[in-house]
Image (cartoon, rainbow, N blue to C red; front, top):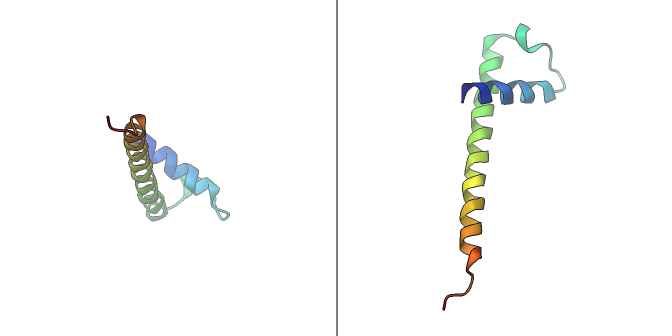
Length: 64
């Protein structure tokens, strides 16, 4: 999971207009982006759970 957090944090950082080089950024900034990555990954997991739930409830829309 740490690898995913780091990868998403780097991607979010790179998408920022003012982004410099990740490896040269101070640890405080890196940690802020890691926190954003954790939030993004948690929201994505929640979205996938909701999608699976929605598919299950739609599979049999009419009760016999």
